[in-house]
Amino acid sequence: MKRLIMVKLGGGVITDKNVHYGLREDVLSRLAREIAEGYRELGETKLIIGNGAGSFAHFSAHKYRTTEGFVDENSRIGMGWVRHDAVKLNQIVCEQLLSANVPVFSYSPSSLMSIDQRKTKKIFIDPVVDGLAMGIVPLVYGDVMVDETRGCDVYSTERVFDELATVFAKDYRVRVIHVSAEEGVYKTGQASIFDVIDAGNFNEVKQHLGGSKGVDVSGGMLHKVEECLALTKLGVESLIVSGMIEGRVRDSILGKTVEGTKIC
Image (cartoon, rainbow, N blue to C red; front, top):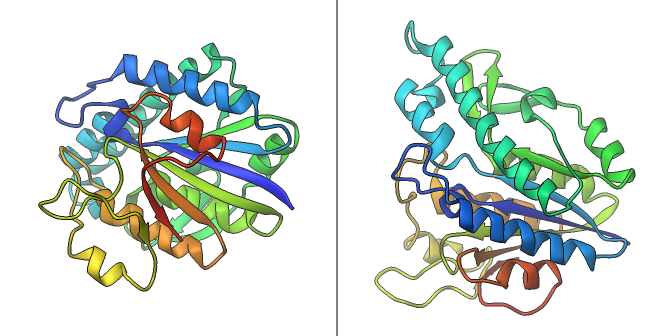
């Protein structure tokens, strides 16, 4: 069966979520190089990359309450600023990956799907399917969407990955790697992480999960784990690893054993 790896660069690792537009350029540059090193050795395995909104779009989404829909006279202009900030960070990520010789091509999620009352209504990912077949590495990101009933909403990179994986799992063996600022999912008050999360221990794990450090309108680690668990029903395994430790992302892409939290 064909193989597909989906790598999400978390906003908390490529930006400082406490500082508006707080890009961690050195970290992003290194991660781009690691992805390039892994990509060169993948052979026939396909790759899709996504990036979180970090301290770019999360700040504007929080300011304009974008996850609540059209709430006041500023909601429409706010929606535009959220899009501006999401695209701004995605362009920076795109530039770093291209400079590292990863043939990425950016796709706007709001052009690939429509939503109503926070749920996906229609999806059109033929451009991504075609690009992947042609040797392109699709690059997606957390985006602001037009919501038919509510006006607008934020659509996280995890949700974009969920939709893409649902389609691609029919033809590919899909593996998802979440690159975080953390080693994995930590146990409350402890320095240790959960090695494995599955349906059997999620209720226990959930007691240890919260939101995100800094400004994050998408739900932080809990949201990430919930989306990963949903993918396990399709046979998709996910891994949460630290992007702050050099070499870990490259090794994860290559399928080497690394420290992190596996969700299966």
